[in-house]
Length: 218
Image (cartoon, rainbow, N blue to C red; front, top):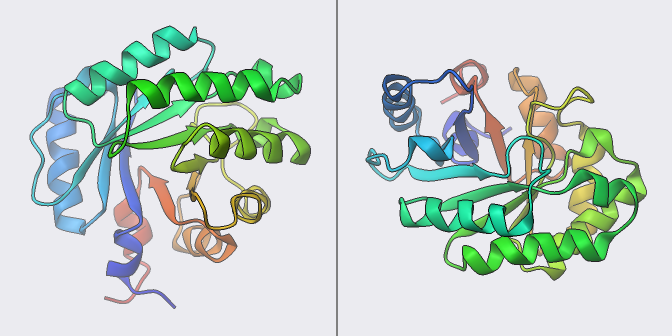
């Protein structure tokens, strides 16, 4: 079983509530440093922030609907990188995915990748709970073809739900270790987090990181 520190290094400690304040973000950063999480993930309007220790700074793009023009997502990503973001989690255009237009999904991701080139880490949120298995596979392939670094299950805001073991496993098999897999959305217990890791998640998006980590041995 992984230790508390092992799991902490996989966590994007997340605060994306619309009502979050700068003071909330400061508290998030301090807690992330205390817990030893890999990063914090905050809304783009909260950037820039001053990192605490080695904690990376992640943000979102086209969030939470993904129903934005690609050039708007690209501009948002570029601004976030200029404001110090190390990682960008973008939301795909779900209508393109559900209608099977994976060339358009790829083009959308490519636009953001061009605006946020390496070494910025690009994660692609596909809202797996709203997709069929075939659509999940198609989105993962599009993300890989577009040069993304991770595929990610969910925003945590879609009514269809968040991460599932089935989706994470399917995503991990599809990308075959060439991309990371981030499980996010509704992961609130130690058991749920460990199940996602067992299924192939290499990063976890958690808002209740402390509660999850308290269930693990140091």
